[in-house]
Image (cartoon, rainbow, N blue to C red; front, top):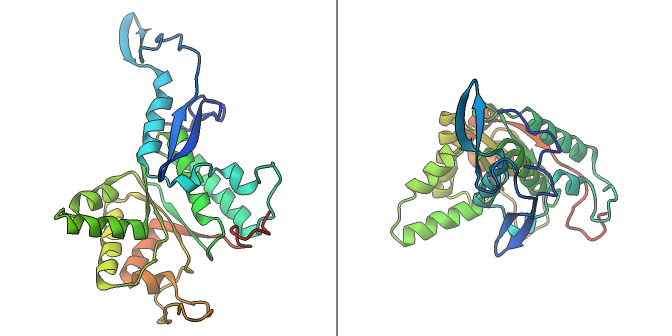
Length: 281
């Protein structure tokens, strides 16, 4: 499958919209003229060398990709996260982005352009301090993968994963189905990798998710607040002080997981001012 042209109806912003509904961002189609090929049935026939065949009409590409988006688990807060909104304000003004953020945007755009569904695709991990737009950029990337390439993606904030597993345990459910889903989905986007108290159980979950992605050779995307590097032995951040932690990704996930991450992803820095500060334009 090749990337769709920028004006293809499956990705045109005139063909669908994304809105916040409850806790999730939901895509929905906008009204369009009746498809002349299938008259709205969803199936079309064509003649190839004198033989008529009937199959799913190309007009169903958009509904199919909307379903993929709605299954991805995108948080409602990021309903309008796109590459354009990362670089521009709502009034169309260019944001005063740090050069690293501009490079990260370009890297993510190139990643989408070069993504080959079904092939071995090396992933990305966006890193930097809180509020730099890493999650915004990650979800914009996920949105492009879905609508341009028809890729199945699962977005999962790491602490939310831990909460879901704990809920399952309390209800007597096994964690196997969820962890298997995360292992087998074509693209897994993990937000806030390394976040948590680093209990033995949390480290075991990190190890299982990354190890299974590694063994399955699945494409993995991530964000993290920690600088890429092997374990340094630095102390974790102290909430009682304003001291900045110098812990690395390796400190947060362990040496074995970090080693596998190095083979799964390229680390991309997103620096600059805090998006969440009112003075940021």
